[in-house]
Length: 357
Image 1 (cartoon, rainbow, N blue to C red):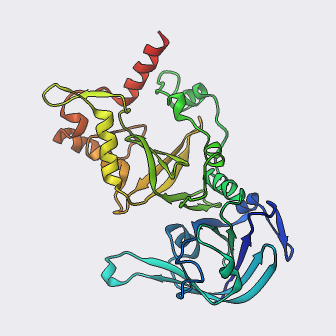
Image 2: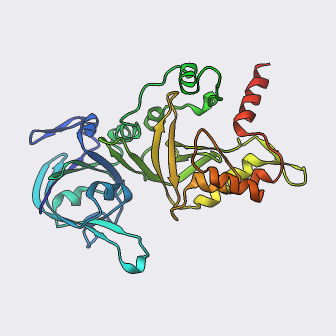
Image 3: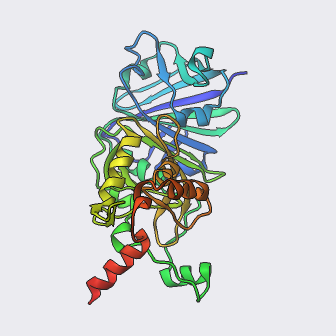
């Protein structure tokens, strides 16, 4: 069974909207696909690599599927000259027994002038229209459209504009139960962060299913303000769902009653869990005050939020998940449970109240 793939290479000098063979690509058109994934091209993806293959990522596998399939491929180059070629490609998905359950996907292609023009650092986008057609769009590194693509895909398809915080909490918990709201500095615009960032060397993979609303971001952590929040490539701000870690300034008491910076201890433990590998974060929900919540795993498949709670460096927050992990940490007196501490939410509330005095 053959499927159709279109490959576009957009020059950094061309306009945002380009027409070729009655096809116009605009960033907003990404919402018309069943699912979309991105990948930054590497040297091994280039046709200069004699294997002529694009190494699969988690995001690409979500689009192509966990089966090996042959495709009829249509190559299209849009730049100073127009090139169109047709051929065949194969998506291979393999899970060798020696890999202990790990699998790898790759797209193998034939010789063509389009992939000769494509260079490492270019943004590659796969858009799946249906079971018979997949578009592969390549945007050259440095094109302003790259930032627009990241900003567009970072938004949840089901996201709603932020509403009044008081009405949200009142509606969720009732007037007799009001939970602490996030500090103002925690609410940031994802689009503004992306559009103002330097994306010339960004290596982030994004997958978004426009029908289910599922989003997955894979990348390297470059900044970590505290034990439940971090930035991927200095662009995507990730707040882990269902947990609350002490702030960077928060102090706790250990088993001997001595004060220590438990906020710093939580951050250091999260750094240890992540290491230098990429993390995979799945979007859970978009809070009505404008904050995105994510469920994240490290390269070993460990759920970062659960591991933080299990180690006693975070507590369960507005969730019923990981309550068993919290009980285990409390019983074993791990992390903050070894001594005395104020719940992070209460600590933030007290800090805010002291600033208003």
